[in-house]
Amino acid sequence: MDEKEKRQLLEDAVNHIIPHFASWELLRKQPKIFVRGEGCYLYDIDGKCYLDTFASLLTTICGHHQPVVDQAIRDQLEKLEFFPNYVDTFTVPLIELARKLDSIMPGDLGVCFFVNSGSEANETALKMARQYHLENGEHQRYKVLFRRHSYHGTTLGGSSATGLPWFREYFEPLLPGYVASYSARCALCELGLEPSSCDLACLKMMEQQIQWEGADKFSALIMDPVPGSNIGFPVPPDGYLQEVRRLCDRYGMLLIFDEIQTGFGKTGRMFACEHWDVVPDIMAIGKGFTGGYIPLAATVTTPHIYKAFQKAGHELRSGSTYGGHTLGCAATLANIQVIEEQGLVEKARVQGEYLRRKLEQLGRHKIAGRVSGIGLLQALFMVSDNATNAPLDPGLKVGNFIRDYCYDNGMIMRNNGDILVMAPALIITEEQIDEAVGILEQALVAATRHYKL
Image (spheres, helix red, strand yellow):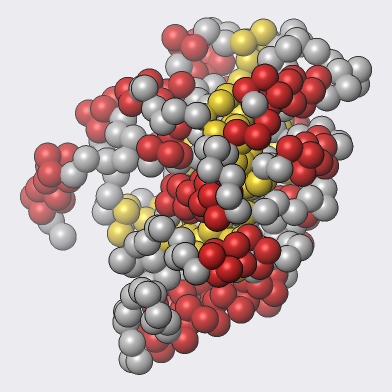
């Protein structure tokens, strides 16, 4: 491809495509066009190689170009590319994937509604909870409890349950009945308390909200057991999730776990909630579920919940033309096979501990603050002085400087303001972690000099 063709591609990309969450700042500089992937590496239109430390937005968790998944798609293409899971029709890969999920999901989760994206999975979970109560004669249960600082997607329901103002502000007023409660970010406690002595005060205040709003009006609590990259993967305190489960049971609310970012090995267990032996009534899964090959996600519930629909003789009033896409199911089955046969869940635990140690060693640089996360989901918080944990001036955009430095030096780095996030593919090696942290350390040094910090 000559330079003229490249320039035309870039021009057409910017003029004819609206990027998801577009950054006008970056689009004005140099848009990136990727053309090839191999393992943890990506190659752009100019042939430059990048180490991807965010697994293509937490999706390509087994790396690019996995031979087993590639072959599974080819094999399925020779049989049937697609037929919808509609009314009374199924395909073999769809059934096989449902069987597989039944065998690996925690507790008695194992009844699946397949959709195309994590946002749709959460939206379906909210609708499923609402209709479940209706089928049981509790028409008044329409409210949803959610936590501030959590993210649950871009649909109207998902946005209504998202506790990050940036995702909400342009679309308010959002859906009625969505009640924001306290998060469990212990390092940045909203109540200004210390985890060692707070006695889970945030949870007690959540219960008071339920009582004040009317406990018999709530259909569900939706939450991410480990919140995502937007706030740096804060790990809940011991006992918190167990008490959340008891709280929902006490007031007849369904518990929805959003494991779209955390599921399928990224925390060192197949699902994050397994670290605390807590099982929700409904779980939304997506992203790394498919290995990034073909869009697919699912809302998974229990036989008990599903029987309420069967008993009433009513369908779940939701649907999607491509939900449970035949090729997507074949790819996902193969992706799970790779995770299991290569022992990638345990590898994520081991490599996650190694990554965390390497990130913590960056504390020798004054702008490198605390590290937060679990498994291969890790975040480094930038500060002006790690001796005092004083925050950086957000107007400086130090995190953006570090992101751009990493890009320029062959590494894809995700930042959320001054939170630097790493969530690489489960196949990452110690050598690649060393490479990534080495580039990041160079970026810290460059930022310290540039801003005279």
